[in-house]
Length: 308
Image: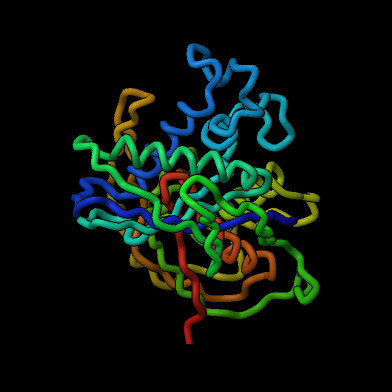
């Protein structure tokens, strides 16, 4: 399994301190999505699912992610996880005159970076929130390197990073590693058990959710040879401390003309026991690419560290 990606950081400057009534990630997702659609759409009266350009359109690829129902990744489903993940700190409401955030492009989505930059520029000119506060992009970075050549041009030649499993030093699949891990949810986690969003879950349900996301993203945007087994319902580790609570968030979707409920679990928990190399790799995968649903809104960001 492998997945190439690029994490690009943006810095925005507003003309004054502005209050965000909702998490800034929700606002940024709406700004980029609406401006990218306006920029790319060649058939505005056609639904994305029926548009002949849906597979070649940057907006359709990143935000609609349409599949034929006879696809080999999620059979019977006509949409898949988006190849774009948004991160911002802090996640919750704030008042500020500047904002840093990151976009993580998966696989071929990295070629759409110039479109996202242009969409963000247009969003800055149009302004955000009901008051239409304008902003400008003051920096775009790939790690420590600035990609901003001048106002309308980015350097897009930098290489992508790669996540893969197994790697050369990985221990045999059946051999476990005893660890105690702390897992902190830096933005709300949403995933389903039994077809419903859950406020509680077992170690097996968490492992299966992480496995499904890694399999889906690698199959659609990277490489998945199908060689890793599905985690069992009773892994060798367990949740020994649980300090999670459900936090509700609401985002109004201008496209759907209705509010979206984006609540999820926040807090931290402790995982203890014997982890197979693949289970441990899944946790590190989630640390890079988030977990659960609605990651394009900044949800599901986690940190993991070993407890001494």
